[in-house]
Image (spheres, rainbow, N blue to C red):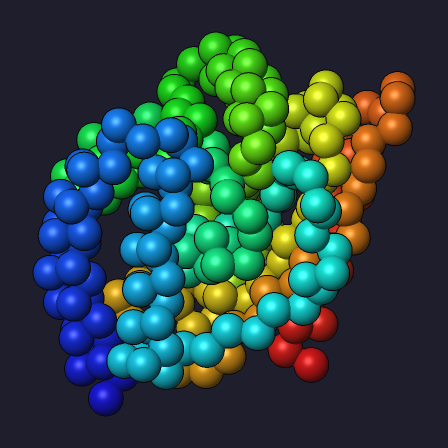
Length: 236
């Protein structure tokens, strides 16, 4: 049954995505926030289908911790699920992502319309300059900035190395930094085709307000400590 449900979900995604993104070309002349409002509807549709077809439900803890102003969202990365779920939970946002993703037909076109911060991972210094420059720009435009500090998806129960990019942006611009933990990898694993029915819990921590003089590694340690301590609690 899990295989059949996962196949149906995949086929629906395969049919809906090209049509949705082709229609999305009509919104290209609109403002970045207006384009985001349209493109983010794709995530709403996919998560609705995930619940109806695959039986994957979502619980959110800590909504009261979402700041009123644009913030940095530093989130655990286990699955493709959180890239969609964050769009339902947080205000308009952009993502820090590898430039190659923008070349994927249809999906990449949609990403390009959301004003992402696309970096070249092979050029670390240039990537950091791009992150700091464009991150400040997106925050000034009213977007939250989503960063996966481990840099790549890490299987549930494992821990990647937390990189300093998000923390550096936080201390340089002074915007609130919101840590986010979840257990999506239990039901929809890294690069996995199968989606197992059940409840995914996403937990939002209290925002960290970088103080003047705070070092990036100190901020990064606070974020990592909260996320990694929170994940085991999500199945309680």
